Image (cartoon, rainbow, N blue to C red; front, side):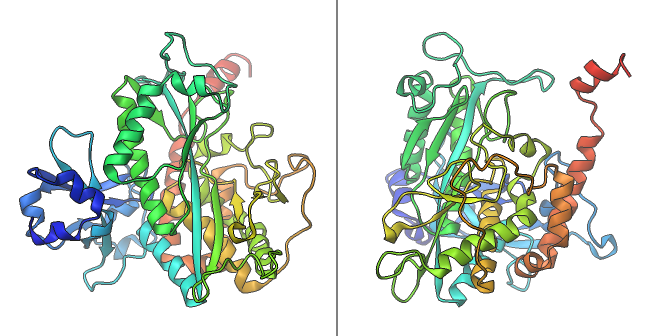
Length: 452
């Protein structure tokens, strides 16, 4: 092995052991969470300490267009320096040859982190916690749909044909036989994850037709965001092997539940290793209440990060186990902020607002910045909601435009995340929103064409 392969994690070393490594995929996440980068022969990668990409990749919209930069006269599209983070190296087990993928750190030409890069924003936030003597811990839940191949965007998305030969049905939450209907896809997900050294905590059938939930173990936010980034790639590839698509759209099928990325959060004292949400007697601490208050006070301002597309807001509807409020409650799934049943050492808050369509790094950022501000401001939350929180709740923005307005107006959030990131994110999302509003939908043609 060459010197650089000695830096690889154990799973990556095992994957290439005794084999000729052909290629390395050098990856970064753009604002949408799409993998951008370069593929190069392994022999060349081993001789190259870094490579370049233009910073315009963070100005690109989901449609491939480019947003208007906040100051066009100053935008010259300079190259960024991408340096491999070897701790993220993992297999690409669906390729025909032996390939590794490596997430890269994104630096400017002076060696400083590029503030627009989502992974850098998350790293910055983790450092702010560390500066206070805290280590944030997260555990994400990934919901997604396995659907029939859809090659015509004008046609609705439909569930896949299952092992039985029948189309997969809805309303089968937690059914093992429902999971077995697309068991071959699940088998490949497990096999790919094992080859990549990624741990799956569990897989269950969700309430939608072809909807699956995959749970990850708790840990460092950057590590877990990297894993979600990788899981999205491998799940899509597993589905494609079996003539189906995997989609992480927030609401891909009309009348079915949306897909969320619930995030469980706790905070550990770095010196003692103890959860700051529980005292020595196991009781809830003031810090736990401050954390909840921060979520209630600032989540509306970061909804644009957790629900980044027009489609995202189709998920925020009552009675589909979707959060449409900022209430908190113990073991209450109608609240947007849920305190799960746990031992004191594992006390945590589950944020049920993020959609699975969000960039995983920015989903973590959104929920962590609210908790951080709460811990710093030391305010108290509203009283716990003991009943059905779906009733009479209108605290969250209901459109992407409204969410972006709140995002742009919240100075405490902007101060923490950085003006440069906030400006480019808002510019990209407003461009996408403008493009969507120019599209005439089938509903409009059906009901307005001859009736108004």
